[in-house]
Each structure stands twice: as structure tokens, then as C-alpha cells.
Image (cartoon, rainbow, N blue to C red):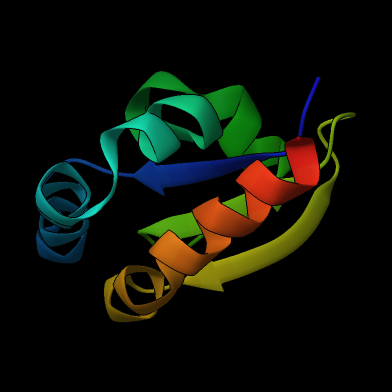
Amino acid sequence: MASKAILFTKENCPPCIQTKEFINVSIDEYLAAEHLVVMKKENHSALVAAYELEKYPTLLLVNGQGEETNRIVGGQFIREQLQYILEGLQEANS
């Protein structure tokens, strides 16, 4: 399994909604499809517990074994860095 970016969001979270809209409008569709997974907290409670997530949105970078290598918390920070992160994952996974 290749490294991935996993975006955790939750219901009724304005920064989560803004971040998902940003992804739909601003992030290259291929990059997002290949390297980004979006998960709702409410649907993935085991992963939320395993990664000890408390704030949303949270972007996790995980290696091929599912181990966390980096974490970014907060919609603004995620939106500022996501394109660069996905490009880096594409290069690393090539």
C-alpha cells in the first residue's frame, strides 16, 4: 500500500465543509483521487480512536503500513498545504 493523505471531517463542522469544498474546486482531481481519502468521523469510529483524533478537520499522512507520519489540524492549515502534500505523495509513490 502506498502512502496516503486521510482527511477526517465531522458533521456540522463549518471548517470541514469549507475544506471539502476547497478540495472539490481547487485540488487537481487526479491527485485527490489517487492520494486523498476523505472520511467522516461518524462513520469511522475505530480509526478515530486508533489515531486519537479530537479536532476536525484533521489531515493525517500515513505510510504504506497505515502508520501516521504527519498530522495537520485545522481547515486553514490544511487548505494552505494540501496541494503540495498531494504532489509530494505522488512523487514519493512513483
